[in-house]
Length: 77
Image (cartoon, rainbow, N blue to C red; front, top):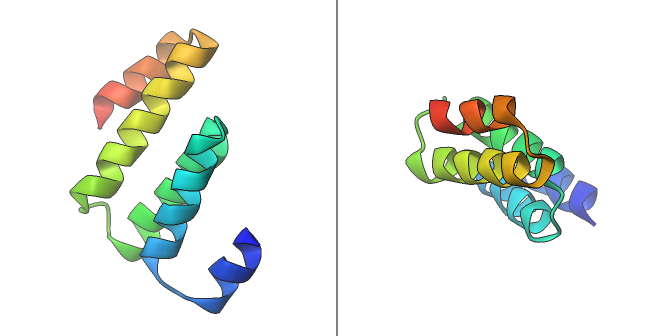
């Protein structure tokens, strides 16, 4: 379903919403990938809500994996 939505509409909001779905399922790596795609491809890295979602996903990943490197990445946003 996600692939069909992503292919049918070429907009950053699709990737952001797919990221939200992955985040809700605790698939933080996939959520980060979707948010990164939206941020770089559609918003040039300047969309604050997308950057906040990226930060939140990295923080959740760091907490789940007990990863200091992921925590530093979260803090870099």
